[in-house]
Length: 192
Image 1 (cartoon, rainbow, N blue to C red):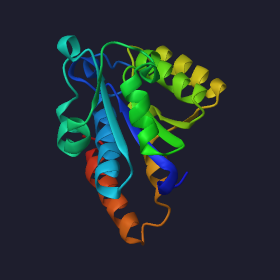
Image 2 (cartoon, helix red, strand yellow):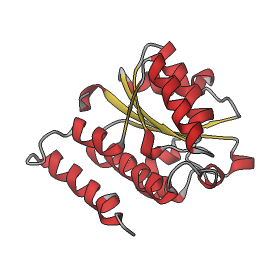
Image 3 (cartoon, rainbow, N blue to C red):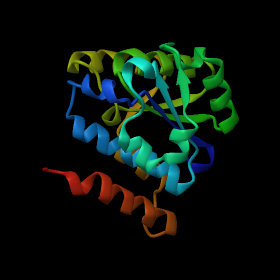
């Protein structure tokens, strides 16, 4: 994976869906979402944000709004499709990014993330799923959903792995920025 061929997609990190996370600590999920959003905003990786049924579920969490205000303003609002690729606006927005490798994180793992990953793979994209920036109502839901995504061809990874795969040298200017984002959003929150 490299910066020139990769885009980040944040799926349905919304007010209500965050409250459904029981599979892992919510604070960790939010910290990793913030890191991914900042990678897109500050390190020039195309970032696409989407939401579903905002009237019922609420808009994207404040953390997405604060760390990626332009992507949030341009978010693709869906009407309830579980597979984001069934929404023509979303499919067109991803195509316009002109990237073949997609890094996806979303809520919930077993519903919108699972179906969207399946859709991305059917569309021919290479997919990495950021497990620790996603979540569901149970650990079993996460485990079984990740198993199914992996069997379909997705790579299951974590946010730190994505960051260090895209920025392999912390001695470069972009590497220094990536390290700073990681320290501020993830490492500084460990044990708190």
